[in-house]
Amino acid sequence: MRERIALAVVLSCSLGLVACKRPEKPAEAAASAEATRSVVPVETVRVRPEPVSQDLVVNGTVIPRAQVQVLPKASGRLLTLSVQEGDRVSRGQIIARLETPELEWQLRQQESGILTAQANLEQARDNLTRISDLARDGAVSQAQLKAAQTQVKVAEAGIAQSRAAINLLKSQLSNGTVTSPISGVVVTRHVDPGALAGPSTPLVTIADTSALQVKLPVAERDLGLVREGGQVTVESVALPGEAFRGRVAEIAPLVDAQTRLIHVKVDLPAPGRLKVGMNVSTRLKGPAHAALVVPSAAIVTDGAEEIVFVAQASQAVRVAIAAGIRDPLRTEVVSGLKPGDAVIVKGSSFVKDGDPIAVNGGK
Image (cartoon, rainbow, N blue to C red):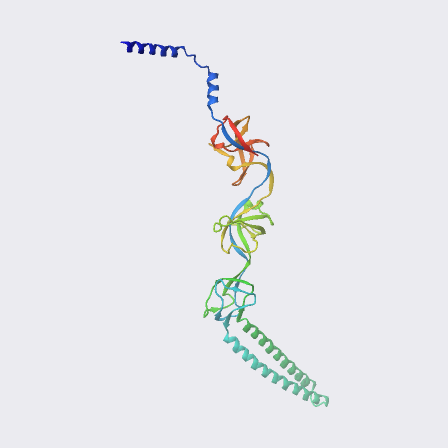
């Protein structure tokens, strides 16, 4: 019985306390909720004008600055080809020899013929001397004298013709020995000894790898971003973490009518780890202009908008922006910010519009 009475007293007191408690006003409730919101530590950076440029990224191929196909000047069967792919050759080095028996026979024939021509010349000169003596005595006519003089001239012309033919054949025979026109590396060997070769048959391809270039196909619409002498950064997936500096050396004078592409060549520095035939990615530096920029990491995507948070009076304020030129580190802000705004760069993903913040550091 005593326990029931005590329980009743306790319940009566509890109900009385609930009934007597004063309800909170809306303003007081909001203030209480604001007090319970945690302060987010952030870091900021001041927005200021910086030079930015519209860069152009294009994939290209490393090529030698000079590359030639070696073709023989004469025709014949290939006797020897003394170089292999990868061999380094010097300018003027003998790399192949052709078999040219027909030329050798023609040379012997011309050398024999010149002996006959010389004999004919001696005979014509002797005859002219005899006719001249007779003409002084009036024993022969002037027509006979003129005919003898003509025979001498014909014999002399025959000798000159034979000598020219001999020189031509000797030159053609020398063309049977093929030399390298440049110093470089043999990149392709097209034939093997025993094959028939001629002026239309390439024997080897030689590349001068002491100077390399990158060949780029640039779209017609991007041609305004390319200028001779412009700086280029070259990278290859085969050499991660390495970047090479180049310079625009040549812009083709014509745009391909089918592809609407124009070829651009970029000079590379002294040969290093880049090799002929490599596929590379290039970034061509465009003309610079001053603009407001923010770190790319500060930009947050909110639906269809891009936003940043600005520190104002210890609060995070949401600001919608329009972005311009981008790169992995910086982004141009076309509208939405003004110089001096403190953009949150660390902690932006943990705040909402109006959240209290504590700026731990900034620039």
